[in-house]
Image (cartoon, rainbow, N blue to C red):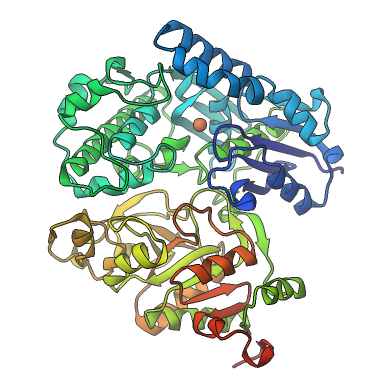
Length: 607
Ligand SMILES: [Fe+2]
C-alpha cells in the first residue's frame, strides 16, 4: 500500500515550523529557528520542510497535501476591519500591518506554492484554532475528549472549545478578538518589563515571588469575567487594536507606576502584579474548564494554544479534578499548529481511522533533527571545530554523566532527535545536581546568562515522582507545576532582592524548588526515554536521589541547539563543564589544550 504523506506548515508570524504525517503517524516535526539559529524565526520554514522530507527520504511529489495552519484571508480581514473600526486611531496599526500582510500574508498561497514547487490544488488552509485543536486531540491518548484552545489571536478567534471523537473535531463555542486571554497576559508581560512572545515564561516565573494584591483592581477595571469563563476586556486600557503596542497610559495610571524598563531591577511591585494576573488567568481557565465539563460531560480534556503553556494554570486545572484526564500538546504554541494542520489534513478525508494509543503518539516529542550516536561524518564535523572526546558505550556514558553531576559538574546532552516544542526533555538538555542550592544561581548567571530569579525544572524517575512531589500520574512533557512534598520543605526565607531570595534553599532539592514550593516537573519513563532514564537511574544508584535539574541546552537569546556543531559551540562559549554529543563525552578542560595526542579515544568496550 502506498504511504499517504501530509505536510503541515506554520509561518509568517513567529516560530515557523513544519511537520510531516505518514498514514496518520507523526514522523517528523521541527521549528525553523533550530536550523537558521534565529530565535523565533518567522520566515518560510524551508529548512524544516527539507528536514521532514529527508527524514522519510521523499519528495514533494510524494506528499498528498500541504496544509497551512491558518486561514490567511480571514486573518487579513480582521486586521483591516480592526484598523478601520478604530480609525483614525487605528491608522498606525493599519500602516504597520498592511505592507507586511500584502507581501507576506495576502500572498501566502503564491509564496508557499512557489517555495515548495507545488500547484494550488495541493495546498489547503484551515482555521488557526482548528490547527491547535487538531494538535491537541489527534496525538492524545484519548478516543474522545473535550478540547480547549487558548492563545493571543488566530484570525478572529482567541479561545475555542468543543468535542472530539475518533477523527472528528467539533468546535462549538469561541471568544473573539479583542477579548483575548493571551493578549491580556501579554499586556502584563510588557508592563512587567518583558518581551511579548518569549517573556511570558519569565513573568510566570516571577509571579510566585509576589502576592496577588491587584486581583480586584484587574477584575474591576480591566477584565469582566462571567461564570462560564467568558470575559470582556476594557479596551480603554489596551492599545493593540490601535497601534503596535499592548498597553497605554491609562493602564499605567491604573497601577500608579510606569511599565518596568526591560533589564532594570525588579521590585516587589512588579512581582505582585505578575502574581495578580496569574491568579486572574487561573480563574478564567478554571471557570472555562468547568463550563466545558458541564456542557460536554467529557471525562478527558485536551489543550493547545500559547496559553496552554502556562504551567501554573495547567497545574491548577489538573489538580482541580474537573476532568479525570488532561493532556496538553507539548508544542502548544503556533509551531504546533503545523502539526495540527498536518494531522487534520490527513484525518479530514473520509474513511481514515484513528486509534488512540496507550500513552500518546508524540514519541516523547523527539521528532526533530537527529544526532547519530556514533558516525564518521559527525566525528569529522567535530574534529574540524577542534573538539576532543572519548566515546563510550551508552550504559557507561549514563554512569559517567551521573558521576559528573554528583560531583557538581554541569553536563549538557545533545543526543538522538531534538524535541519539538519549547521544552528540552533529555535530548537537548543541560543537567545539574538538584540537591545543590547554589546550582540555581550558577546555572542562571554562568551557564545560561539569564535573569537570576528564574526557576529551574526537575526531571525525576517516573516511579519515584510521588516521593518528591504531590502528584498523581505522569508529566512527561514538563507542562504542569506540582507542589514539592511537605516533608521535603524547609522554612521560607526572603532575601533583599529576588535573586537573593531565589538563592535560599527551600527543600532538599533546592535547585528545582521555586519560591512557592512549586516545581515544573518532567517524569521520565523507562520505555519512552531509555537513555535519559538510565542517567537518572545511575544517579539514583550513586546518590539515592532520583531528581536532576533539566534545562534547555541553549544560552539566552539563542534557539535550543540542534546539530553536533551547535552543541559544541554553545558548550565552548558557556560555563558548561562537559557535553555529550551522541556517544561522545567532551571535557571542557581538554578542549582548551586542543586535541590530546592528536587523536580521539574510542572506548566502546570499557568495563
Ligand atoms: Fe495560536
